[in-house]
Image (cartoon, rainbow over all chains, first blue to last red; front, side, top):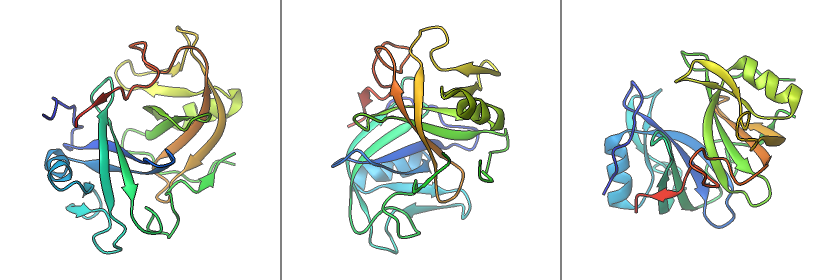
Length: 105
Length: 105
């Protein structure tokens, strides 16, 4: 059962992806209702690409798919947190394990 | 030095807040340029409230402030990750430690 979520004016909901084994935050991407349904159906993360205006399965080209272990939603119902098992070297297209590899201070 | 970040069309950047002691994801909120500067200056998280259209310091009423330990930005420069020491019972206005306390599956 998917609860009544709050999507933004583009029909999207920000989705934090976290590695379940060590709780590292890997990335943030956007889902819409259909990509959330696909994620639940397949057990692999699917998002909506705002720049390419299309669905994408994480790892569809790199092979670095994300096996979904748990999906949580926040108190406001406007953000998702997906805990995954990250396959391969990492989540970031730069080759880094996490997209958050640079610090401001 | 704050890097050139990509704010959305409302001048906001989604910001994931993570507890530095156990890597638990506590919440997601939105910063603008000024709230990021205030966060860096004061060492406490500051956000922009979309519903109230004003700045808020996390914990300004509850006392559950967040002491900033590290600020990271992602490969696309359109998301922040702030690692904090969470003061008090938790981050969520519901009294939960994290805003992500409910699962979809």
